[in-house]
Image (cartoon, rainbow, N blue to C red):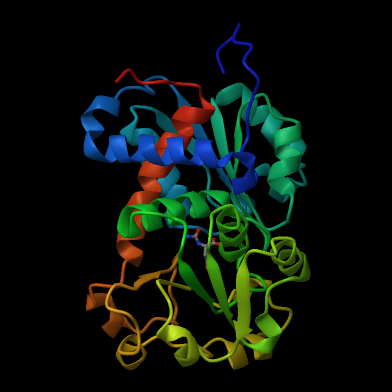
Length: 315
Ligand code: NCD
C-alpha cells in the first residue's frame, strides 16, 4: 500500500471471506479480463506481488506471478522454505513485517495450517492464503468456481463428485465450503475409508440440512449421476508413513472405461498436479477440463489482485 492510503486491508484466508455477491463480481471481472486482456495490461504498473512459498508449487505460484505480470506489475519472493530466512528460524510474523516494506500484496503457501492467518495479523499489505497444510486453498476454489460457472453456466443445481484424498486435500475442503452457499448442490464424496472428509467439514455439511451428500467407495457407482467429477491426488506429503501412501495412492484411476459411464456433458476437473489418478488417455476426452481450469486460475487471480489492491478499471 502506498503511503497515506488508509483503506482497511482485506486478506483472503478462506473462500468464505467473500460474500457470494463479491465472488460473482470477481468472476465477472475475471471474465472481462479474459475477453480483453489488453485493457488491463498496465493497471498494476509499479505494483509488486511477493510470493512466499514455504511448500512446493508450480501452478499456484506461477499463476500468481503471471497474473501480476499480465497486469503490468512485478514479482518477488521465494519458492522453498530453505531459500528464505525460515531456514534460520525467522517467524512468519517477522517475515511478513519485512515483506510489507517491499511489496504491495503477498501470496503465501505454508505447510502449517493457519500460518498465512498469522502473517495476515502482522501484515500491512493484503495476504492471500495460497494453501495452508491440509486446511484451505481459497484461490484454487476461486479457480474451480470460475471454471464451473464458465463451462456449466451456473453454480447451483450441480451434482459434484469429489474423489480421492478428501482428508488432506485442502482444495476439496475449500470447494465444499464455497459450494454450500449455492442452491441445490449435491455432493458425492468418493474416497477410501482412511481418506474420508475431516469431521469439521462433515459438521459443516450437516449444518446445511438442505444439502444432500453421501460418502461412497467406488467411483463407478457415482459416475452416471455426476455433472462434475473433481479428482484429487493422494497427498503424499501429509502422510505419516510411506507404506500407507503406497497402499492408497492408486486407489482411484479414472480411465476411458469409467468415462464411458459418465454423462455426455459431465466435466472432469483436477487442481493438479496429477499423479496416476487420471490416466493420460482421458486427456483427449472433450470432457477433461483440467488444463483449461489452469487458465481460469490466472484470470481469477488477476481479478483478486485488483480487488485486494482496490484498483477499479473503468468500463
Ligand atoms: C493443489 C494444492 O496445492 O493443494 N495444487 C494446486 O495448488 N493446484 C492440489 C495438490 O497439490 O494436490
